[in-house]
Length: 221
Image 1 (cartoon, rainbow, N blue to C red):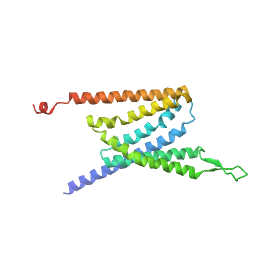
Image 2 (image 1 turned 180 degrees about the vertical axis):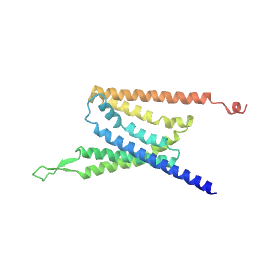
Image 3 (image 1 turned 90 degrees about the horizontal axis):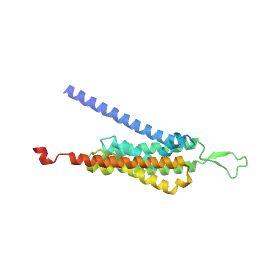
Image 4 (image 1 turned 135 degrees about the vertical axis):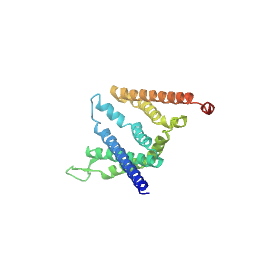
């Protein structure tokens, strides 16, 4: 009885540490994503600027919540962690922009022209996108959890992020490409190409796995 209780306590403690570790990693990755996007906005080199474009795209934020959900067996943990990681990313993003002086403004009645922080603008945007994260995060986290099913049932969920990337990049190329430099267009085209390739691989792998799976009758034999 004592050994059984000890084993139970050990397993419980191990699971608790695992949850804390995963939670910490999810929040850290979210914070890094939120910081790097605006931090690299002025990068002009062939590496920094494409990284900024990728990290600032909506599909990469969707991928964050999706991957967090994919990493957890529990659907509840997937939903909660996905939302928490996105909220952390949003807060880190706007705090970085605040530190860069994006919310500085001049008082109309101040003759000295001393800039001050427009806290109302900062808070409204941060709150709005935190609310968006709380709505979309659980959906994406649940989709990631359901994508753990390696059969055909999990295929639509595994295709979610590549489809979002293809749609977003196609729209940007159609609407914004002419207003941006060649490096921007090349980055968006590259992301779309990789996303299309990922979709082909995912569908092909799922179909091959389904065709090679033995039927119930063959399994009995």
